[in-house]
Amino acid sequence: MKALYVDFDGTLTNDRYWRSLLEEEYKKVQDLLFGNDKTLVSEWMRGRYTAEEINRFLEDKLNLPYEYLWKIFVTDCETLSVSRDTLNCVSQLKSEYVTVLMTGNMDSFSRFTVPALKLDSHFCYISNSYNEGIHKTDNNGELFRIWADKLNIKLEDSILIDDQEKVCDTFDSLGGISHKVSSVGETFKILSSL
Image 1 (tube, helix red, strand yellow):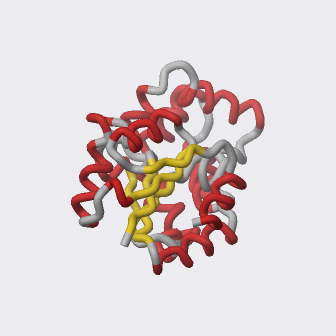
Image 2 (cartoon, helix red, strand yellow):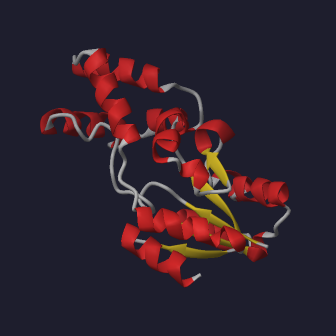
């Protein structure tokens, strides 16, 4: 058996949280959380904040009602667009690969996105940085080594599909084979060719 690690954001979807806000509000949220200083988001993705705390932070900084922000946030988490064909392709690969959805993400991903999109029915395992407490590139790819041990599948027998060059380089340095993608369509093509 081989292992197949697949990223989420930028690899399976391009949709964003809070995307249903008014354009001006959305831009302010993006600038505040994902602009030059991504410290807060990085800490959130490591499990140090909850979605509720982040939405309270936005309420305070942007002077928008918490209930308004929260409702849009949850709905947007539950309705991220992921290709059914791509997910079906992942499901079919389970006969040859142990499939792991490995994402740098937030508590909201596990709480809202996974159940709404039934991602756990397509992947054998889901690894979310929020629950792991570390990112894929931390400590020279420690997370990949942890999962290789957990699955008892060497990284040399593993494939990664990810949109981040740094993550792919880290995986390659550990002996795995990575495929860097620049679109969700490219992800489908690679999965179809495995």
